[in-house]
Image (cartoon, rainbow, N blue to C red):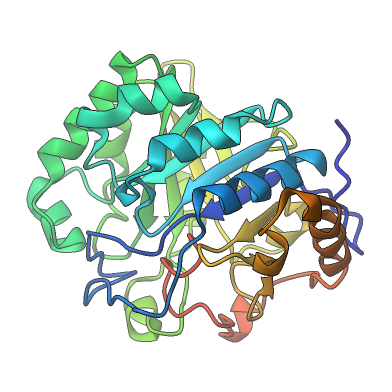
Length: 327
């Protein structure tokens, strides 16, 4: 299907990142260092509302949906949400980004419900450092969860690692050893500045170009990007089962290949991770009969998407932390 989601700069959008909660049980120092603070007035999208979001985007040509949070697997109806999105045959890839702590127990049920891809956040392969970063002593459980994912039939698992100076920027060889015999795509994500994280950013930001140069010197080669892929530059090596991805939002022209939109856990359409207050869709998620109006609003508002983010000017928009609309 050709995407009916095209912006004013001729970019086509095949990929939806759908947050289903902003609750998280980890306290990662670059995201929620003080832990999650509940808001009694916040109502997350219901299963029926999520079904309507999925159907609307599917009919507009969306091929890939990623369920995000917070920690999406904290939803008690998580398996039902997977099944609801998979009712749309146009959506070929249904992924989740998770901290992985429930994978060992539940990943088979996610696969059975129709999940096709998993990203697990692992910022260090040292158990003590993992505990320091996340605030949780769960390294062993997360590693067991990744193994369980392979046992459940996932051919490849992606692992997200936030690249931080003096934390893991000198650990490339350790990560390479880990993926040598494992079909893992390990993705280094540049630390991004958020409203609450300016001091951390200044202390720990390091460019992914440092890793890219090391990979090229070791004989890794960059792959071609598919239209519904995320923003990672992916590198492969004939001696490794795994791959390395680099996500570098501060690199020139990063936004030229943007192909993804976001819907927050309270039903707001966000045209950029670092953008505006969001465009409410919730009033059009009450009845199935509102589908055409929902699709029209998404298409109309897409025309207001900016050509680029403004991170280079230190402007992170309304994004106070990365659990806000799912990173």
